[in-house]
Amino acid sequence: MLLLASAALALPGTAVAAQDGPATARPPAASPRADKPPMIAYAAGNRVVVVDRAGTVLSHVRRGTGGFSLAGGLLAKGYDTAKGARTVGFDARTGDALFGISNTLLIPTALRKGRAVAFSGQGHRDPYATSLWLRNGSGGEHRLIRFSFGGSPGVHTGISEGGVLDYSFDDAAGVAAVVAGNDYADFSYDVWAVDVLDGTSSRLTKGQHSRYPAVSPDGSRVAYFREEAVCGGPMPGWRSGDLFVVDPDGTHRSRVYDGDCDQYLTRPHWIDDRTLVAALHTRRPGAHPDPLYDTQLVLVDVPTGTVSAPVSGTDRVGDVSVSASLGRVAYTDWTKAKGFWVFHWQPGADAATDPAAWSQGSTRTYDVGSVPHLNGDSTLIPSY
Image 1 (cartoon, rainbow, N blue to C red):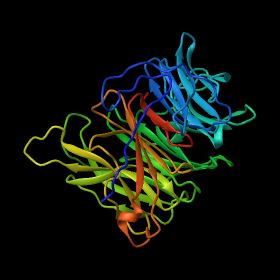
Image 2: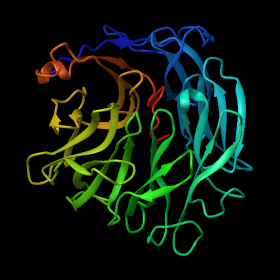
Image 3: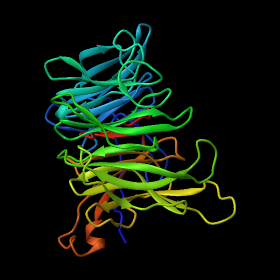
Image 4: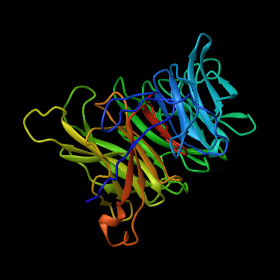
């Protein structure tokens, strides 16, 4: 079993409850630290806060309405304005605005160590709001893919209505896996792979029951979840299924985990080129348990399908962010309004033969904030 070394982390600019008493004085306001690389961004009240590995606040920007993402020295933040939704790129160390992108949806993703931003288009850019775009380091913008729903222009989906639901990139942002469909009407969705360099795309799944793609850091594999059954609970219900991996060209498809309504894995993220972090849903005992499932984070060895003991400090896992470059996993408890954990994966020397050594690591507890986003996470995080 994994022993989690947990320690409360006091962040400048925030009030944190001490272990032996209530919160006391508020430390000084944030001061930029150009010599410290940003590690994580999180939402705190009306601000998005960026901290380094030591927990020192580097910058903060207005939260507003919209998601955010951190890569290299760039914080990409979506805003809903009087002139429509837009994305603003900030210097993550200072909070200074660097550029703006108009006619975007509210959730951007920073890529290529801060030299690119992915975003969904709308308005004058795309009146159907069914496309994914990329802004490169020189400021050029181009459309990666547009999907067709019910006769609108774009790549045919066979789905009556929808948009871009999920997406993920490799570290170099040369390969994207994109989900098109809807999770509000008939819950239909499939996964496409996009070659960012030449603009070609291919459909990776059929049946309109696949989502949550994750591209491996080296771009060679795509993991995704395929639904098989609705297992109860309020709409849209708990949906069990199987975890698959496939090459971006659709070859070498394999089932990594065969799930059912008793237990299944979903929301995969790569933490290295052969290991996934996934949410393990286990049905709780009793006739009508509430909640219906416990949710924990586990490691999955893709070549063997081996699943580790839980590495999360809660069985109510909510938002998850994974950075392969940092070797870290950030996650929340969906029953708590604030606070999150960051697990630092540090497999032992005997990891190849010892399951306990394979899942070793340490966990740091942040008592403030929500919706954590680790530097270098190239998967869309829909919460904000």
